[in-house]
Length: 517
Image (cartoon, rainbow, N blue to C red):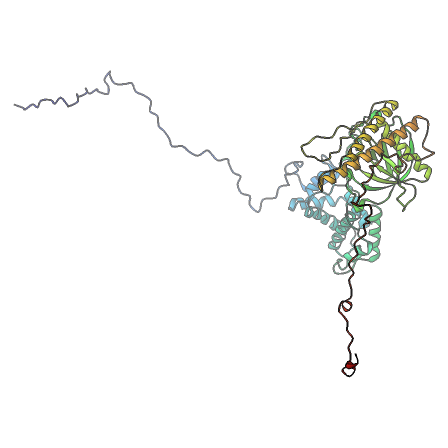
């Protein structure tokens, strides 16, 4: 008989086996296959260009259609068809073969036969705005030089000499008419700098002198985009006022009208900064007083009209200036200073009177200065908008402000600074401002009162600071001594004697006469 082993109580019970096709089996579930993560698809890359592929036009401007030929693009640039003068140089200055082809085709449209180098350069600079870096500008001037040499082969031995002289003219124009701090280049220096640069030879001296004189008398004009627009599309630019908040209805308002010729010299720019040496020359202007503005136009007419805002301005004669007669000092609200010369003493009085009256009518009282934690002097804020009061109300406000400034000046003179250095500098700057402000207000009150009384300023030059009333100065402190009988004498100065005088001299007695002494 088969042996049977008893089941151990520790053995787990066996589970019944279920056939796959049994009704107790779970339903068939869809199989899910997990794939490993893959990298995102890379964008398709352009195949590398072979060296035989033709070069494409520069895409920076975005104005040329794709596949445009250099000749068609050059004609479009010359006619300014869809481009502006400031955009033409972008197609000519690149160091590419396509840009060089466009530049050659563009320069072929210029006819320089029979013109001098200066005339051809002026004509070329009127056609486009020469912009870009130094190398790019020089590249464009190189195309111009080669075209000029092809049109005038007998003027210069090579295109390189034309290019050298062209760059020299551009630098000379910048030195003579640009912003400079030192002395301008002279004619002899211009000739010396170009010695041996015409293919190893010297340029004709008379030719260089003629070019120097022409550039000095008439600078090279640069093209602008405003000339391309038709008159209907041109937007009239507002004049650049020093005080741009002046409404148009105040232009030509109440006040004395004055026209004449003035010579002007700039002493200080805005915020009292000293003008550079190159800007301090005397220039002749046709001046016109238009309400709160002083219009200046070069005589002979050259360039745009210059306008000076007169709110918070102050004019007074300048008798200390002895180099020219009939000179007055004009200080504007933004602390610019000018020396102006009139034609006669009578015109000097009329200009000073008219400017002070116009400034008194349009100057509003200043706003309080900014308050900070530092104990330093801060100038009050001068409103740029003109006053809307009547002349009588304006005179009353100016008298009130004159009294306020006088009290502030007396209080400032009474309180002396305790420290030294910076505190004394701040105290002195504050005092100078209060004295100038009081002098300005006093001039306004006198000029406005005379104008309301029917005076035209022909009799006397109002605004002279020498005769203006000044506040009493505090009495200086005198040094006292402990005893009135003592008279202080200055200490004797130290006398430096010659070395021979410092030594004690003795009489040398010979031996044979020593017993006689």
